[in-house]
Structure formats: C-alpha cells, structure tokens
Image 1 (tube, rainbow, N blue to C red):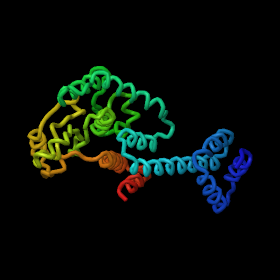
Image 2: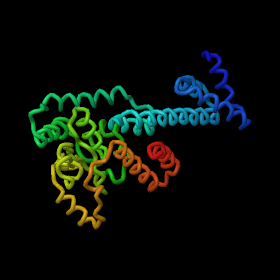
Image 3: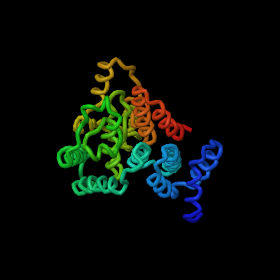
Image 4: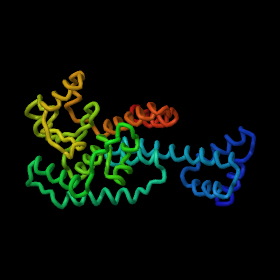
Length: 287
C-alpha cells in the first residue's frame, strides 16, 4: 500500500463500531513494523483519547508480534546469549537504541580481547575478564535487585553499570562466549552464577560436572570458587541438593531463567498483564 492508503485506513480507527475497529486493527497489525511511523504520526496529530488508545494498543501488538517472531528465529539460529537478552529488553523497552547497546557491548568485548591470548590459563583469562569488567568498566551488583525488575534488563545494566545476578552473568558470559572463552550459566537458586567449562575434562572424568573447571560469581566481582562452596551454600539455604545446581545450562535455558525471574517479579507486583506478556515469550522457548 502507498502512504495515502495507509493513512486512510488509520483514520477509520475512530469508528465507534467495535467490529469495524477489530477489522482495521487486524489489517494494520498484518502490515508489520513498517506501519508504526504512520500510526505514531496519527497519534501525535489527534486529541481523541479513544483514537490514541487504539493506536497505542496496535503499536504494542505489532511490537510484541515482531519480538516473538525474532525470538523464534533466535531459538533456531545458534542462541547467542546477548542477542537473546536484548530481545527480552526490547519486549519491555521498544524504544531502546539497539545500535548504541551493541556499541557498548563491542567496546567491552574489545577491551577484553586486547588483553587475552591463547597461552593464558583458564584462571588467568578470568582474572583479565574480571579486571576489565569490574575495575575498568566499573560494573557492580545492584543492591536493590530484589525489588527491581529493571535490574534484570541488559539495557538497564549497560546504562547504570549495576544489575542483578542473572543480568551480570548474561553480560559476562555473553562477552566471553563471543571471545571463545567457554563460560556458561549455572542456575543456582537465589544467585545465578557461571562456570568455566572445559570440554576435554568431560571425556576423562564423569564426575567433573560436565567438564566444569571452576565457578564464577559476577555478582561478587567475579570471585572464583569450587564445588564445595556450592555445597555449603545449598546446606546453608536448606535447599535440596540437585545435580542441576552444579552443571552448566544452555543459553536457551539461561534466557528461560531470566524470563521466569521477570514473571515472578511482575506477579509479586500484581501486574498480571505484564507477567502474562512474558509468559507468552516463555511458551515460545518451551514448545
């Protein structure tokens, strides 16, 4: 359709007949993201509250549909951890500047890359990553993360330099993975952590937790620890000792944990609409 045809269709959104509105709504949503600028212009040029609210709902539906489509593609195309986290952030913050976010990530990645070489041991590599993350770029824990769903979004983390355990872990692991450093998430309750996974170990010792060399806690400035510390934490928190608390999880599983955490937040806040929106994303990754 050309510009005039689209504008003519949008004008019909003020029709009081609900069936007419639904027909126009369906037609506009099928057009996809390309129609959003026309809808925004129409919203700005109107003072009719019903007309504006209808436009807002259509824009949101188009946006959500686009993210769901991209999440399906993400699931079947390599599961880049940072890309997955960015899609979740865009679902909540459609206006975020993706280009700026990628520039910030690339700068962080470049600073790590300049210091890393293949002759370093695993621990030496992590020491460098920790220095770049926590000393040079000043990333740190959010002291209010238990009351703030915002601390879980990667765009908020990059802006404030403070985040929740899972947000810091995703950024840390995502950068490392892009640099071929085998860092993966570990879904430890109440404190999502990371592990350094050496695939060579798995071939020689089945009791090495699928090749885990050691664990890393980005929420505590990247401190390195072993299996005994996790066992002590489980005992202290009176948790059931599960094998999953010691093993690396896939990037898809990490994003699922992120979504579950956001759903739990919005449920506790009584925002059922928001939690249901994120459940719709969860269904894409589960089925």
